[in-house]
Image 1 (cartoon, helix red, strand yellow):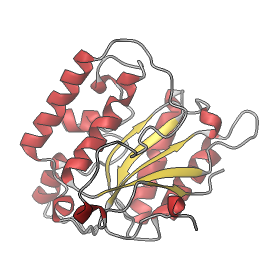
Image 2 (tube, one colour):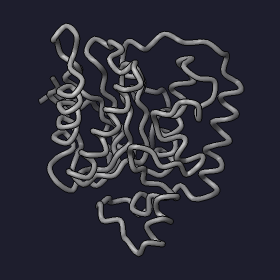
Image 3 (cartoon, one colour):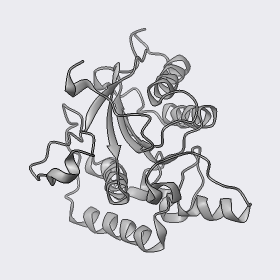
Length: 243
């Protein structure tokens, strides 16, 4: 298998995944369709035993920051999500609902986790769908900002405190202790919200055209130290059969 197609899963890390509707058609443009996706994601989260740190449902693609499942592989869990959504919603032309592949980025640090959350939460603003991140209800930003509970349970500082009060424990396994605790913390949460507000104020209003390739390519010009690059898996696409 070519290096560019290799996936690094079952390594106890979080994963930032992106998958798109077939030919980037806006099959999730309707509110009802986005709600269906959220409910399916929550059902599969419980079934396969993964937790969701953040997500956003866009009209033609999805971003999710999630852990590896306790049951089955990440590819199997994502395949189940895609197949359940396509079965519920279908297509007018009877064709495929999703593109077959998905993009998978291994999140190896707390700072990278925050970076991915910022990226996905700003997506609706960059596209001109809303003026502020909190105006887009089909994602996790309102949970981080207000502690709001929606259709998908978000693993956050709010959720961790609620779990502690109930005497429960997080059982999903990850290697990085910072990701095991999985808390943004008050200071980081405050910086995340402030960053969203600042960047939104600096961004011109109006929609931008959808990208023709996965929005997070991981091919920036900044080089990583040689001592670290050997231990960090490259940002590579995964594969998942969707219908």
